[in-house]
Image: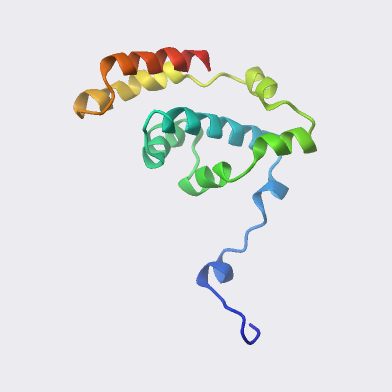
Length: 132
């Protein structure tokens, strides 16, 4: 370390390559899917910790660190520039994410806790999820 240079524990221990240089097409598509799921559920008031524990970890088997790394990548732009792909078309080719099934599984969470979401709002969320 040179004089006057500030060193932090993070910069000494975590020397990972930038995620965009190492991510292939499938990883970028997975990042797009995770971003879509994140937007869908955070717009409805769910926390990111809840989204990771109850939705992403059981379905995608990703760690919390990977979840946040996927949120920090502009995967849609990279897919368009590097691979010349439209992310919506590519995600439509893959197996669709079952929003309705997830929302039905999460219904227990609504029933056990008095949440800020009413039954009619819950039904609207399930209908919106079937569109994706």
